[in-house]
Each structure stands twice: as structure tokens, then as C-alpha cells.
Image 1: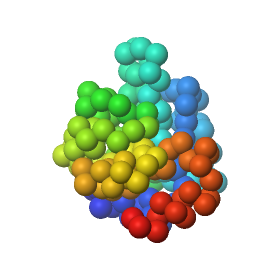
Image 2 (image 1 turned 45 degrees about the horizontal axis):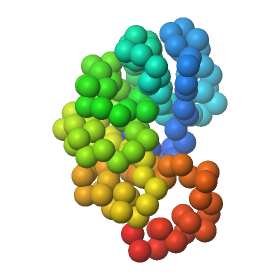
Image 3 (image 1 turned 90 degrees about the vertical axis):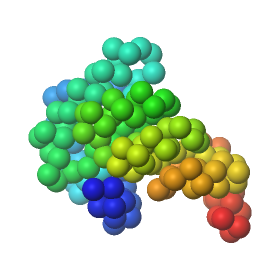
Length: 156
């Protein structure tokens, strides 16, 4: 399944990100995104409390049940192995993290999900790949600009 999701990401190139929208509202949004041609959706974990994280889990379960045959779903802002496990239980197929945490990357890959950690420096990008990441998200990209992306990609 992991290879299929990797290929879907490569083919589609767009992953919609949803924050703070849960349940039926998120399902309706996902349906609209799908109708508009977006077939990858990341539901971010709210870091405020365990209860908020559970809302994300329940939403991902609903999305997978209703649209899992036409869309791929993942979770974002994943910072712990516990959150990886929660996402897997919900049916998530990819994990997006704001940092390059070896334990999160390795747990994601071991769970047969696609790993997309965040990295900013060349060392973080290289480490992410060493730890098994499938993709690396330049984060926070908005602070750096195109010249930085070009400079970091050249040697890596």
C-alpha cells in the first residue's frame, strides 16, 4: 500500500491540509475537494489536548470509511510515535511531521505508511532520508524562498 500512496503523491502533487474541521464538515469538504480534483487530504492533529487529537482520529476514520476508495488520507503535525499509532488505527496512509524525528519516521515506515517529515537545513533533509522518509517537506518554507530551495537541492 505504501508504494501506491507514494505514486499517488507523485502523480497528484497536491495535498490539501485541513485544520480544525472535523466530522461531517470535514467529510463535506473532502467531497468538494475530490470533485475539484484533489485526492490527497491531510488532517492535522491539534496539539492542545489528547481529546482534540481524538477528534482528528475519528474524522480520519469517517473519511476513510466514506471516501477511502477514491482519496488517500493522512495526518499532520505528528510529533510522537503514539500519534503515528493513532493515525494508523484511524486508517491514515501518510504521516506529515513538522520536524525530523527519527522515531516518528521509523515508526511510520514500520507501520507501512508514507513518511513526510519537515526539515529546514541540509543536515535535517539528509537525516530524514537516512531515517527512511519517503518525501521531505521543507518547513517552514515560507521563510526561505526559491533561492534557498535551489541551493539546498543542488548538493542533495
